Image (cartoon, rainbow, N blue to C red; front, side):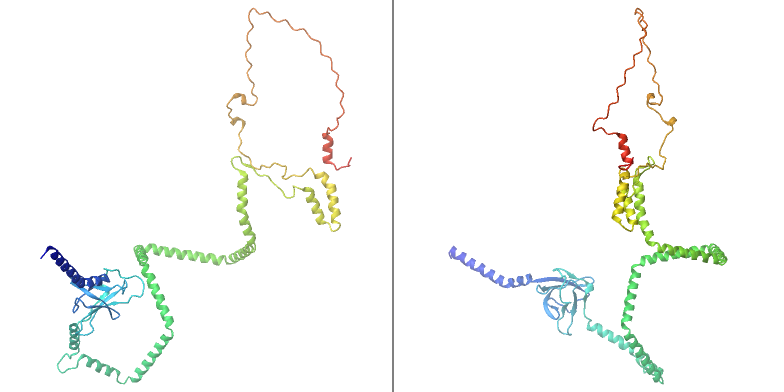
Length: 448
């Protein structure tokens, strides 16, 4: 066989092998990629085998892949199709439809929204359940039949004794039983009519119990403090007795005082009532005072200088900016007729007198506080020449030179003759006489 034919045969063999492998393994790999794997732990896995169904609401959605025994449980690994999501809080139970059919794992509840169980997650032992085995059920039946058998041969068993005792107790009590049933029915009816109140009471009781449970630490601290107090009272009985005696004596004195001053206290309370009534009637004024007082005190602090004990503010009165208008408007308001003429005459006579007496502020200084001062003997001067009445010392005269001639005494000069005083010149045009201006300010025009 040529080398070329051998290569062709080898290629055909490899192709066929790959095709068969893809046919056998491909579907399984495809199925594995379309499933999610989970793990569940059961107390036991009797009758459960690999390949058994995984169901949701009775519909098969996966199979059991592996079963591994654990020291205290059984680990079951199973896979579920991806198109069937499993809720995060899912539970698992092993079902046994009959004695001979294979078992299955039921997942519940069905997914309806919310978080999902992530692939690879596990369902713990607390969220799984297993069916009761037939052997266990049979053993429980045997225990029940043994308990119901009579204690002695030919005797009456426990059920028979109960029936006989019930018959003896009920015999002749038919009317009483009937009345009891009727009253029980009435009681149940009453409870049914007040079901809402009962449920509300139960809910409130549940809230109370929850509050007490949440305050368990506080209750424990309260119990400890109460125990400390009771221990202290137990250890000091005489002090408590003396305190009670002293309190009794004080209450006796208070009672005597109240009995002796009953009338005076009544008068006092009556007057107090009148005072409180007056305060209540003046509530708006009190509110206004409390509203204005902080601003007034703040303004006072702003104009008072504590370092100099001086007031830096100026007293300003209303209507001082235009006194003639203020006086005439007051006279006009008091007049009843010819208001315009009264106002004009008032301004005509008063305005010339007070027109130059208009002040924005009162021209009077006010300083009621004595500020920081010092006596003359408490003042220290940095230089002597600053002292009041200081006389500077006379500078010493320089001695004349020894050979210098002595100056001749000055001859007496005649007194100068008096110079004639110039005549008073008449006022030039445009010069203002201050005396005449002051007279015009004080007197109205045309007065002599």
